Length: 168
Image (cartoon, rainbow, N blue to C red):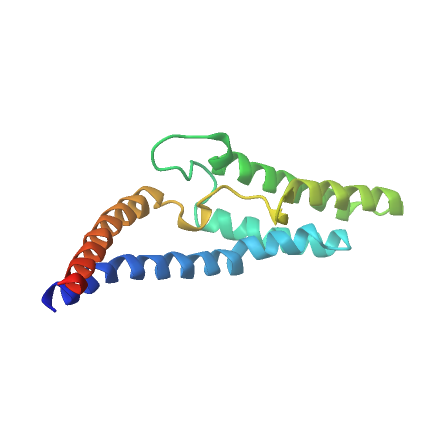
């Protein structure tokens, strides 16, 4: 019985870390990723500008404008600087478009279409907002990886202890 109890207690930190990662993922969606999705699907330049501005401002205020989300090696899809610069350039384009007094409906539509193509990707599971993998844990991705590794090993040991305890 002791092995089962110790084993279950060893699994708790891993479960807690998974819950914490889930919570910060929800916060990222509420603070900036959800606004990127709204900007991508906006029907007017003004709405798109407002939504994109929320995301860009949040990223800037939280110093999420440079670096990589990877903990061990760098790949282009984890480049926060490139992603941020792309968003900032899109916002500048929307600001310039909103300042124009004369614009045809075709020009407005093309601007919104370009924004949608910048912000959204398409995959086997449908449309998604483009962002670096692991952005919700940025800039502490290395620390998160370390804790996931440590608690994962601890959870594995706990699972083994529970299995041994149940077979005794």
